[in-house]
Image 1: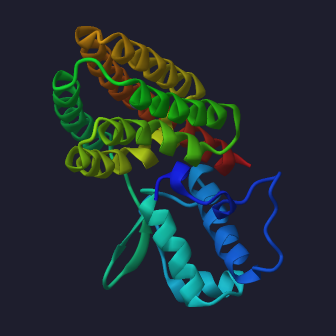
Image 2: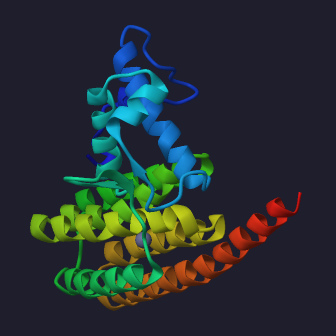
Length: 247
Ligand SMILES: [Zn+2]
């Protein structure tokens, strides 16, 4: 479910502690957050598998609750499931991300080409999504930041009234959320958000050529940023691994 459509009680935060009357549900959210942090901090490697029973024992909760947490994580593009071998952290490769971004470029350019002047209500909806992205950029939740930055593109299709394209983009962006969460720097994320603001302005002016240019450059930049970052992250990880093994 997209973030902005979720009830505000759906996610824990410092300002909004867990509702004590719903301990079961709160435990589910704690598991979800713990797994996300473990993945984003690199303590759980992409590709690693989880048994529902095993995770349930660790947290002292039922398998059902673990399964619910995993289903939410899978809707965020962080884990997937195979019938026999259970849940695993999605292992994004840079090559896959490149193909996905190429597909997005084709779909999103086509969508922009088909729309000239965009109505005031649609622009307002795009701006309100942009504000959510900006507050995520100011916060610490990397998973939320990556999710919202990716989801903006799905939102454009929604706002322009094409639910088929929105579904296609939902699939495509889900596959880049984890790679973005793992590899996107703060500067890259900031840059993405600025592109989104410029795109909304071009759409508001009815400047289709400029909107098209921004869309194409945006995705080319995203791909380059992820590729460079993946390289340097691998170097950092090797560096850390060897540094640790020395002491
Ligand atoms: Zn974007």
